[in-house]
Structure formats: structure tokens, C-alpha cells
Image (cartoon, rainbow, N blue to C red; front, side, top):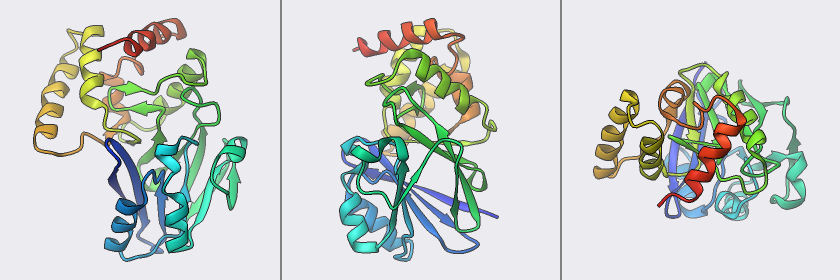
Length: 242
């Protein structure tokens, strides 16, 4: 069983994600921050959309929902805890729930820190996790609502996923994240190699995502933080990094 995953660039540096279950043709779209590029990708993939998955409430992840739903009739699925500040949900889910994407299954993960109601969707049949603004390539989300302990727990949950799991995150922040990461671990050979590769990808106009959980465990200073205090210190450093 296979689920295809496609990144859709949106706005200035966002990504939405399109998932297609090859067994049934079911299509899901995660975090449509802008309608036009998402609708174009849906049309190019055959014009079908069954569901919209939302990781959190921020406008750059949900502002395209209304138009996408109006054009496709897709159901909207998001966190029960955040239903009061998400677009109208057809299905409210909580961490620990499972969700059918055709013949595939998405596992709903608790993923607080960036926002308190943030969730992620792990889709084993795609070998992917839709992690919104919790985990980025070589970085993590700002703690706009949660605490360092929240983020540490969220990243620990993601770290337990299989190493080959694709990290389908919400933004193209990689080059800035790498510059900061090199100040934390300047001798990290895997990180230095990644810096060169990421620079080459961006020079060619290509995305740096998805990466993998294994890659993040080797190169990401937030995934590599051994305790909450270390993560908190690194997050403060990144907040003030220019």
C-alpha cells in the first residue's frame, strides 16, 4: 500500500502537502495557507480532493481552506482542542485518534509548543509525518503559546518515528536554521555536509524538504537537545539570531 506525497509551495515560504492513496484514489491536503497553488496542484493530480487536514490555527496554514472547500467539497479535519479557532470542522480529532485516508491510516499525534492545540499526522503508508510548525528542517517552531517542555515532548514523540519517515513541515526556513545550527554544533560533519547540499538546492530553486527523522536526529540542534533546559537555551538563541 502506497500513499504519494507532494509538496505545494504557498505564500512566500510555506508548504502545503498533497497526499494521494494509490489504492483508492483518496486525496488529502494538509495546511492550505493559500488556495490558488493548492487548487492548481489538485487539478494537476486529477481534480479530486476528499479531505483537508489542519495541524494548527495560524492563518498561513488555514487561509486557503474556505476557497478549497468551496471548489472541491472536501471535509475539514482538525484538532478538537482548537475547534474554536480553526475553520469549521467536519471532523474533530484528538491525539491518539486514527483517521482513514482511503485504505491508509493517519495517526494523530500531540504536537504542542508552537501552539497549544497543534497536532501532527503520521501516515505510515506514506512513510511521512505532517508536522506543521513543530519540526522544521534543522529547526523547530517558535514557542508562541507553549513552553520548552511542550516542545521537548513534541520533538521526542517525533523522534520515535522510523528514521526514514519524511518530515513534511510547513516552511522553507532551512538556510536560516542551518546558519544558527552551525553556531551550536560547528564540528558536526553531517550538519556541514547538509549546509552545502541545502545551499545547492536553494540555488537551483529547489525545496530542501522533506527531510527525514533520521536526518533531523543527525543535524537538528533542537532534536539533539538532551533535556528541556538545553532546548530552551537553543530556542532563545534562535529567537535572537540574525
